[in-house]
Length: 320
Image 1 (tube, rainbow, N blue to C red):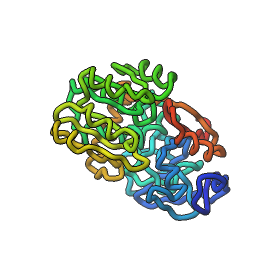
Image 2 (tube, rainbow, N blue to C red):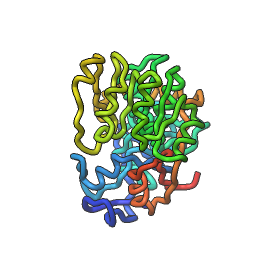
Image 3 (tube, one colour):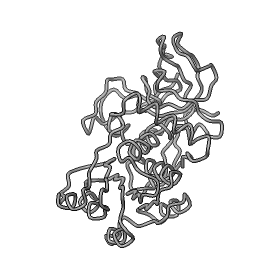
Image 4 (tube, helix red, strand yellow):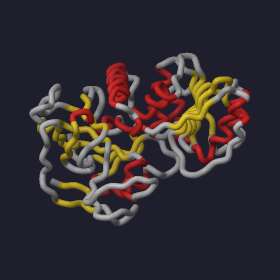
């Protein structure tokens, strides 16, 4: 089979298309024919060996994907050959024609969701749900500010928050991103390149919850926007930042870290049950910004880190 692999850390010129043996599964695993693979920033960090991530070689990138079950281990129940599934994690990497997954990483893909959309579910939607409902414990009717809402996690959070009855303030860095957020039902959309947008949030009544995708830029300015008892959930960060703790003290507010890797099995079960319900109801509707071929994986890794995101980055591995 074909797989994109690297033999060393790096961001460019290290991933090559290789002919590799078909992987074998253990009794508690599933073999999936990959139709599409999702690309997330964490994939680039692992490939580059940055941000405290590491891997073993040869390395096939990719945690998220969607495809068709090709083989089921004898101890695995609830799945059948030919079943459509999405992947939230992989043992062998999803940037390949076939991949091995532990049974708990495989989830049914609703018929109304395409393989390309299914490849966008694992990291973005699970991150958004955990940030909103497990970390922030958001309540219906609260005001939620999503900083950088036009990216994959931001869009997922917008869809979940609106469905739950929250007032959503969304920010984007491009006209295209702003138009996308408006079409998805954001109650207000602001340009996060305009420094006055922080004051606009305060003037509009502030935020009860802030989902922050770039804390090193925004966190110190987020805190004055919080209402009493407000919470900031830090989802993304690329450096250090200075804050004034009195902004927290005056509001009985909190800054909460969020890493999907910290989710325990019980949380993951709850999260993916919510995603399944969202697929069935139409709440979960991934937006695809760019599609790449398997051989273009390095270009996809560049695209997922570029500013001005308008959805998910997907690698199309095979034709349905």
